[in-house]
Amino acid sequence: KPPRPLGYGAAADVPGGVLCVGGGDAARHYAECFVLGWADGALTTTPAAALPEPAAFLAAARLGGTVYAAGGAETP
Image 1 (cartoon, rainbow, N blue to C red):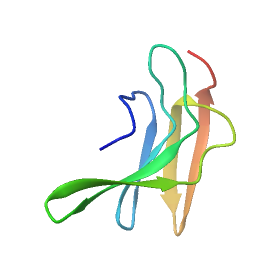
Image 2: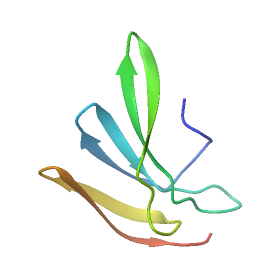
Image 3: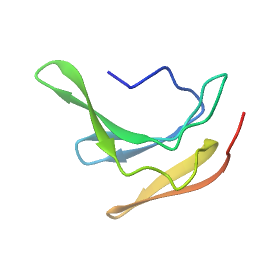
């Protein structure tokens, strides 16, 4: 299960699932990233490296083995 309700983050398809990058809620934006996956009929969440600063309203794309994130706003 995701760590909290989030919106306005970015996502990129990665081996093992979907990398969720940043995002926010009504109070703040987050730097956390995680991979949503599927195993044995259940949703899994695996922590990934965080962004250097909180961000929402950003974009992400995977090129080869690297995911790039760009843009975004640090605060709501």
